[in-house]
Image 1 (cartoon, rainbow, N blue to C red):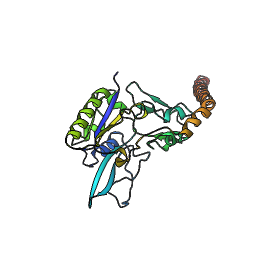
Image 2: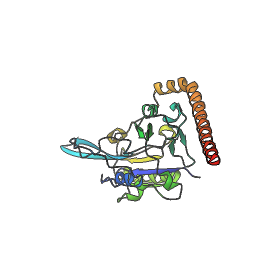
Image 3: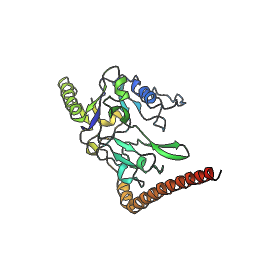
Image 4: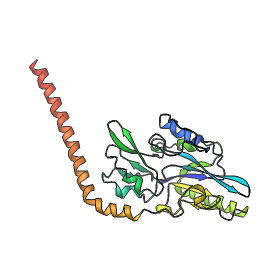
Length: 265
């Protein structure tokens, strides 16, 4: 199956947050109490119950205020920094190119967050344990032939979804048009970063104006953690496997005990 991508044309974004609301609605994420912090940007950060948000990047230029809107969520990198550092092997890449967190395996250590150059995953509660939460790229939708909820909700066409190669071609054409119209710094972001992102941006200016790292890299510390954690990852995998087997044995023994009790009755 072809890898999928989300294209965000920041020059068409009006900061309406329809994408943000659609993400909440589709994923049935509860409302989160927030407070005014002096900016129109709300909520101020991602959260286990907030997987995406519109960032309002405000700059004073020539005695006026200029906004650089950017939609922020998991970038679904082709070479994600979060995956190799996970000690429980809970992070993988799907056949559609999305980065998936297996919350059954996740141990909530937050190493994925520290390794992510975009500072995306958040750790929160799931039942009686802590796990990592982030955008799933609406895998339940796209694996059934639909577009992501955020793309469905965008009223201006700033956010669209489709095959990665098609979205890259659209981005290249759009950047060429913007440059022709005088936006000399117009560029594509996401084509090469982290092996290629599942989220491709059309920017009218440099990435830092939109709150994006200019050259995202996995830190040396994360690389060293990956090397150090290899034996731990093996043990964690073995522990998870043993735990699953023990759970199955316990359930079988409980079932047999109930059956014997019924028979004795």
